[in-house]
Length: 354
Image 1 (cartoon, rainbow, N blue to C red):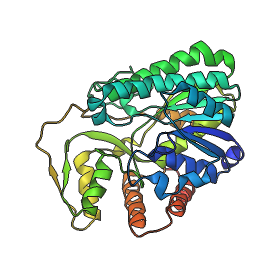
Image 2: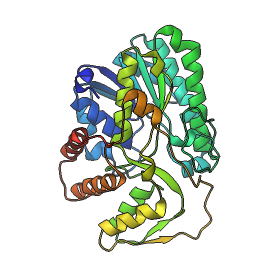
Image 3: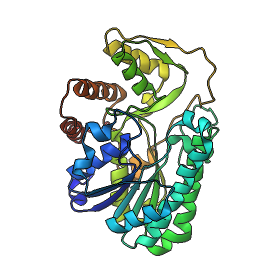
């Protein structure tokens, strides 16, 4: 990743008030980019956007909805960006069962609205659309999913992200290839890290439990996921955005940015590691019937490793330790902007795992 590339680049970032978007905004501005955010209000309280004072580093912050195509197009026109990162989404599987209409409206039509805004803008050279590892048709097999595997999704969230991938492919071939805009999609694993307070996610649920001196209740102890620190996929998005901006047309396709296969672990393994790190922490299984979620999911990131020269830097143990360290710093009243930047710089300085 070339830090100098990002200096003075104009970046339009949707979802900047969210967990991944907040980290990406801080990283981009630390490298000298001019970042223009577009998102709803932060989805939780507390939240990374406020805790790390993300807004202070932005060139502009528009609080608006992806489902408002006029507001979105105007914000993008005002920003006149070189590069677009699309992270805004309804990101929760369980919420998609509660409100499937909203999930599809945001994740599918919101993506269409974004691409239409890009078409009208005229300055954009590269777009990175962030979807999810859950966009694949999950066959519950032991092999990691590759970019050539079929899109799908059992639950509305996963299905909506599979649909967003199909929309991305259609817009790339129908409009962007001929128009000189390079569009790629990125699929990451289960990201963890400081500043995530989302409901029904394992690490935030664990941290809430220890903060409240309660026993953590987990739903699916044997479910296997590709766990990774949030900075891992973000580094991939940045490398992808740079390559697209440089006009590498062969890069304009789908990409996996997942952890090494050894870090695809069951939920119970994660919880036991966390309990070993936090004295007094404990967990139990929730016996209440739960909505369907995939049991096994892994990503094959061979293409990103071979073509982009991207590789994970922190193993799962290091990712868990950095997450706990961030949370402890927040609880102690530390400057969380500086804490985030310290972790970003530590990540950049870390030797790539071979």
